[in-house]
Length: 104
Image (tube, rainbow, N blue to C red):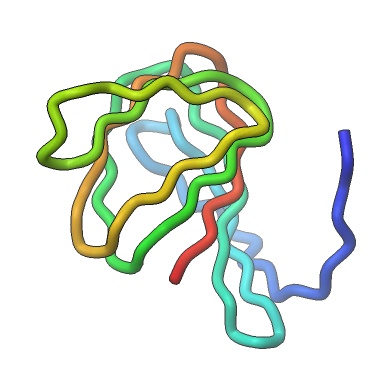
């Protein structure tokens, strides 16, 4: 598994959502870019977005349905998907999902 060395400000208090089914930490890079790094445990959840997001999946498996779309799309570690800002998406995690969320 590759790791990346970056300079970032890390919010050490975890973001805990959905009764602990999703836990992440917020990062801010020197250029102001914001990201979060986390894990989603097996569950079916709905997330709302403010800014556009790219979900980079490191490990695990899920299905995603963007707001207004009838079909689910399967994704695995090594893949990513984009979500427009000010919308939502459903995610069904079938294997613990390790991710990096890129905002903006």
